[in-house]
Amino acid sequence: MSRRFQLALVFLLACNNHALAQLGSELPAGVWHCLIISPRGVTEQTALLRFMADAPVATASAVDGTVLAWRELSDARYDGRSVLFSDPGTKQRFEGLFDGESITGLWRTAQSVGEWWCAPVDAPAMRVANPRSTKAKRFPFPHPLRLATPRYPYQAVRAGLEGRVVSCFKVDATGKLFDPRILEATDPIFRQPTLEALERSDFRPWSNGEDQPPRPACRTYTFQLEPDY
Amino acid sequence: MKLKASRFVVFVATGVCCAAAYADTTTNRSVVGADPDLSDGAMAIRMGSYEKGIRLTERGLRSAPSKRNRAAGLSNLCAAYVGLEKPDPAIELCNQSLAINSNSWRTYSNRAAAYTLKGLYSEALFDLDAAAAINPNGRNLKVLRQILNERRLRPKIIMEDHQPTSLFSE
Image (cartoon, chains in turn green, red):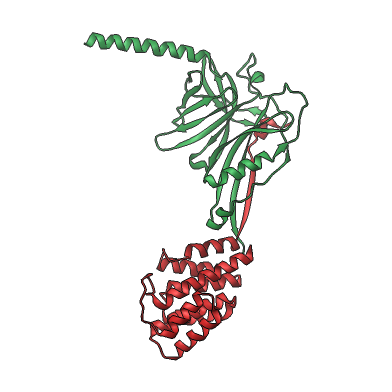
């Protein structure tokens, strides 16, 4: 019985190691720009995450286009779709789904849970020979061209309801906004007006060429009611 | 939109007032047997015949009713004047009613409607809170609060882009 158990254990470990070996080779290597959202979407912070095949995940922040020192996190596990790693400093455990263009997921600690979202920071350019380079590539900023304001839902006004919606999307080289996603909505009533406003928004084109990769962007709408005395 | 809201305030107020003639101050239980003029006046106000309701209620009040019925009658008159869109006499009558019975959520609600008509939204909110504190499930309090919100709250939407400007600047 004990021998059988040992054999089973060895078999399981072997399978697991095989899987991990496979996972490591398919990591979405490169530098990602990420939005780490606090529980209930109260605040968010931006951070860079770097995934490399043979190195732990690293994080850094950037000031004036210069990436500050990278800090190493844990090794990443990747199964072809979901990526898992943790930050020993903050005790956050990150789990996200990679859809080929972005990573979306949740982070957890013992007490709380929040969301995170990443888009590549010009992935080809950042995957250069020296991946530990501290200088990030500069991008043309997609300037908003048409800013649509969401309508405040009538029912929300009557109910005295305020809220906040965090949405992320991509902008193509012609300035067209696409693939909008709601990362956080304090109340579902604000989702539809947000999506409608994003649909009516666009950005200044930065290139006519179709080979330009889309730029990630996020926008937060805060719905407030002010007493009108 | 404002006109609609105003009409709805009137509806709320009359709905509240009618019960006031019959009912206990803190519950919705009917207490039949009040002065006939006060009862008929309350019914007339409920049906939207505000002048007739005022006439009957004033006659009922002249017949020296009990303290409680007097407070209810004054509250009904307050509601009738709200119905006639005359907030000033309405507020005065509600004040008189509250001087007799300061624990009537209906009277607070009627005065809140009068204040709403007058555009005194903070006073209306104060009275609405007072009414809800006495009877959180008070009929039409929720509707009145919605109307008040619609009138006094100005929607504002703040937009913030989360482009990493440090990395993406030209």
